[in-house]
Length: 229
Ligand SMILES: Cc1cc2nc3c(=O)[nH]c(=O)nc-3n(C[C@H](O)[C@H](O)[C@H](O)COP(=O)(O)OP(=O)(O)OC[C@H]3O[C@@H](n4cnc5c(N)ncnc54)[C@H](O)[C@@H]3O)c2cc1C
Image 1 (tube, rainbow, N blue to C red):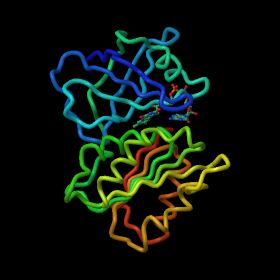
Image 2 (cartoon, rainbow, N blue to C red):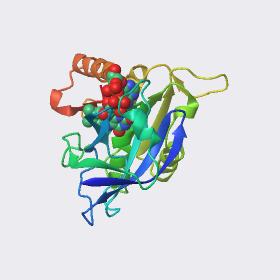
Image 3 (cartoon, helix red, strand yellow):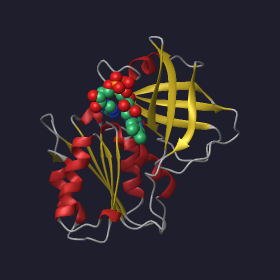
């Protein structure tokens, strides 16, 4: 299947939001949290990389991704050079990083572009009567808080959704949470052990939070994760 780029916009330094259209199907079927595999020829070799869907299902054959340009990255560099109308090979959505059914009160923890699957899940599942969700979102700088307005609006609209941005390198003037997401885990859990925890981002954060949760007696079946590296 081919994916045609419709547009891409800068979300933060070295991070862009991409809108693609899958050529062929009228509707791209997927479950929030899943990823697509994109492939292209780079330097004479076929390179394939996975990217979480950042949009919710239901927008026909359109889908959205949130990508950062990895320094010296083989694939993300060329992706950032793509112009609207250009195409890439794609494989249909796959992956097990999806909300448990039925969903329970959950804590979502993202760092960087690990926010993508949570945007999809929240857009699809957050509504009156849904379980309570907390999103702990860690980035370095305030300007890296992708989709901040959207999450703030969700938090204003739904009292059972909490959006907690965390900056590891806050500039003067930032009055919010600081440090690593791990430092805010206890407060987000509020003493509860009956919530599911979903983690997405780089290995270091995912492994560290899993270790803390296991130490707190969390069952491995309550912990869901996707590692990007
Ligand atoms: C299931 C899955 C879903 C993913 N979803 C996304 C997504 O939604 N958005 C996204 O930007 N990336 C995502 N990734 C990472 C993506 O697949 C690539 O690894 C990333 O774009 C780097 O590829 P590259 O060829 O440019 O870098 P390479 O030349 O392969 O170099 C990779 C180096 O960059 C590191 N790295 C990998 N991913 C990142 C990252 N996101 N930020 C910083 N360093 C990184 C690796 O540890 C490695 O050292 C996902 C990975 C997986 C496995």
